[in-house]
Amino acid sequence: MLIVAVAGILLLAGVFGVLGIGGSIGHPSYRAGGVVTSSSGSLSGVMIVVDPMTQPRVIFTNSAGDFQISGLSGGYHLLEFSLSGYETTNLTLFLSSFYLDPSGNLTDLNVGMIPGNSNISWSPGYSEFPDLETFLALMYSASVLAALGGLVVLWGAYSYYHRRSIPRLVVGGMSAVITPLLPFFLGIENVYVEVLPVAVIVATLASLFGLAVLILLSFTYRGVSADYR
Image (cartoon, rainbow, N blue to C red; front, side):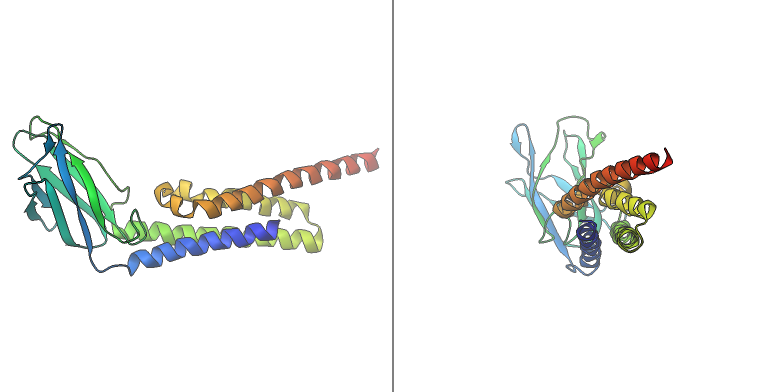
């Protein structure tokens, strides 16, 4: 059972590695688009400033309220929507071939604007990553940490099967329980959805193994107590 958990954890490490590699060598450019609406319907003539703080460019929604933005690089982008009589709306996006949309294109966004003072802004977000480098660093960190966790589990299994070392077995079992939770510790639970099935299998095997270890320790303790008496 523990060996199967090792295989699952190493598979988890490989998946995060693939996510990192795919995010770094994915599409050279991406597209984003959708429609801007309010309570009264779609809004035409909305000014959209793409990345206003870095390399700004401006587009406008058409008569149906639709907009399309092409040539976006991978990573974080800020879209600023403004129209007279409406609150300014800031929309954050993160574009990657392995995040949110497999094709790397977000073309069905629905951006809502609220009537009011244009100096007020609200910011719906589609990403918790400030840039592509942070995303890649977290993916590779998760991959390396999961691989190390898998090696600890393997060490515990080997030590027990060949030396009957229960303490090392417990350490390996604890690593099998904790490793699938790494994405939550790293704050990448959104990406974690992509590999959740693998993590569920690993966590289930680790839980069953943990129960088996507790039963084994219970019998061992009783045996030692009986010998002592």
